[in-house]
Length: 90
View (tube, rainbow, N blue to C red):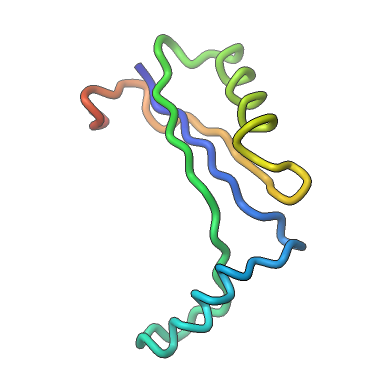
């Protein structure tokens, strides 16, 4: 079993009001020196079997058609772990 991670972020030119709200709150909470915050989504997919090129292509299609709104979001697909047992990486 393997874990594949799909990270989805708003495109840089798209306004991120949630990220801006967090960024404005940080100094009030004592966190200085953070000039920008962008929020996104992370999907962790547990994949049965090997993660070969065909499996990655299917996951890419899944991300493009279902997990991300490609008009306003970019995404990346990466294999995080090839061997996952009971929710913990070996």
